[in-house]
Image 1 (tube, rainbow, N blue to C red):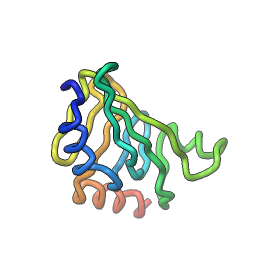
Image 2: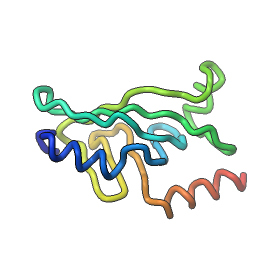
Image 3: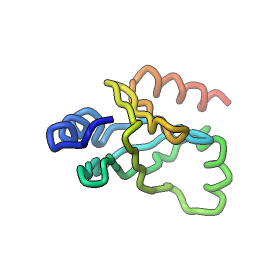
Image 4: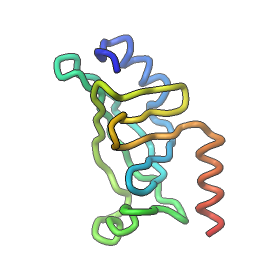
Length: 116
């Protein structure tokens, strides 16, 4: 990863802020990402994620969590120096979460969820 300087954080905000994504971590959810921020001192990027309630979702561990917690689910995510980004993805880098923003991926996964 990079030291999250102001220019890089702004680039990530422009690319992902407010966008819909598929969140994958021991399951899958349709999410919206907000409040992307960097901390140069602690060398990490963080954001808020909120579930977009969708038929066919959640999947995996989120299915059980949703029975215990009200929808929509919300929490903060954080990635350190192994986090990677592309134009359409963001990966924590060491076995944690991944976000997929590409419309064709989101639409394809939603199509599968709706068909079950």
